[in-house]
Image 1 (spheres, rainbow, N blue to C red):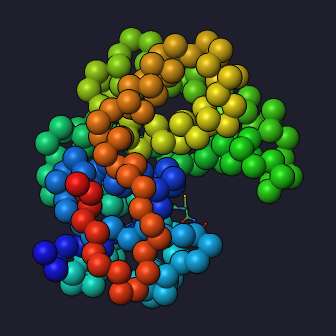
Image 2: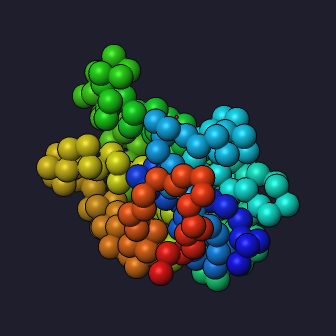
Length: 210
Ligand SMILES: N[C@@H](CCC(=O)N[C@@H](CS)C(=O)NCC(=O)O)C(=O)O
């Protein structure tokens, strides 16, 4: 299939993870190009000068260069689990704004000249808000997973993995179970295949990978 959209992605990027999960659940077949962020391909920069991942380039040349836009675009085409019915825009904005701010300053204190303890505490306070919801239901907008869960959990994963021993003893049973469920899902497993960085001339790689 030559007309598949091209997906520029990076396996460990939480924005790219959430885009890949939406593409997969919606059955949007792509050709995936794994990007090494320290050596971005010219074709990515030409398509999207801001050159963040994920980026979709459609066969007509149109470009989608924000992960949430990729999620909404693919789910608007096909949404078999009704993810768009469970969208909490405020919660996603809080994740992408303040939570990501604190996550970066907790995880990379040298890069930001930040106090990791201060930013870990601020991140924890935000997770306590998620805990209030997850104490009574399995996912953030009801029992079934939706776009809100998929948009947020890759960032909570990074927060948890920064110091897993500390995270595991926090009084967050709902968040811990929710995170574990998503990390153990077939969906997450399927989008975490390891790929070599793409180079011009490489044979196309189908996504989902078989
Ligand atoms: N708002 C963008 C953010 C994407 C983003 O920042 N991705 C990171 C990787 S996790 C990136 O590409 N950074 C560019 C770089 O490191 O040069 C989105 O939602 O797609």
